[in-house]
View 1: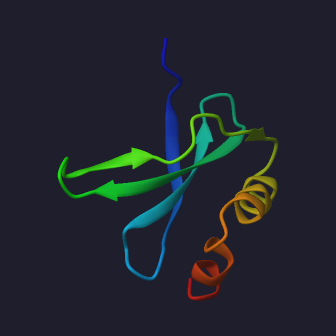
View 2 (view 1 turned 90 degrees about the horizontal axis):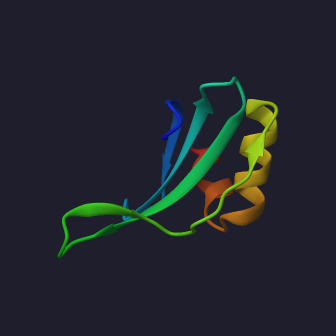
Length: 78
């Protein structure tokens, strides 16, 4: 059974070939996913298989910044 989620934020790297999506889960917790664009598949593919769930949006953003090296710079431009 899949969990419903609502996208709250989306950040792209400078080349727009990677992105991080922050989303709210159905039960009210938050998580994120880093994805990379694969040209030959014309699709966004997850970079990591397992991501944490967090109690708050702020915690999810902090966790994502700690795991995705380029994200802090992208968030400064937001």
